[in-house]
Length: 187
Image (tube, rainbow, N blue to C red; front, side, top):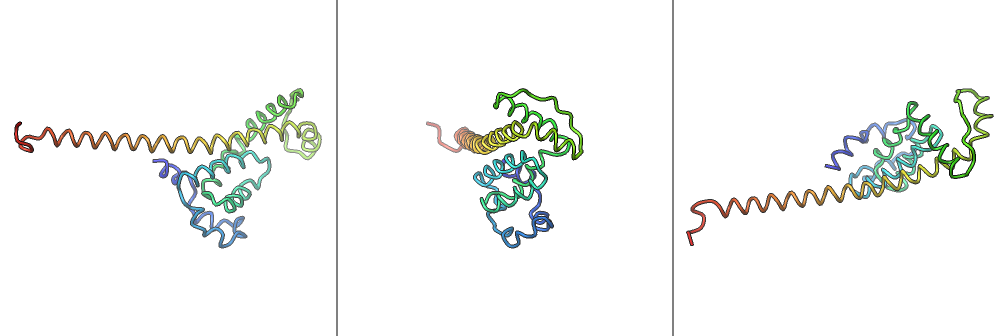
């Protein structure tokens, strides 16, 4: 079950190999370890993708792919998880990270009104960059840890459930064999 879930979630390997932004990686994309769906590759890819999604600039996908290649974790999943942050989700997520960073630094939370101008970037970002970056680093690390250990935990639960189901089927089959007439002479 977990393997099929992650395979559905991940983009197709050919799409990543043909991506023009990743073409500079060349034959490194053909390493089979980057395409495996096992517990360790998936856990590492989740940690990497969830960490990189908090990077506050656009080439987060390229960074996730490059680091996935060096770490030898599942490349499609690490790239796919970066897209949790998108133009709709970035403002509330980054604002929450900013507020967390301000609390951690013990500074007052500034009222920030966002506008896509160079003036806003130079003035407002100059005021909030420290709490924002601290908050982003904190939530990125927390997300990566939760993703890594969460995958290991859920994968283990799935395996235990499969073992339990197999044991139940075996016991049920044994009970049916013992109850069938004519199988054993009456004692």
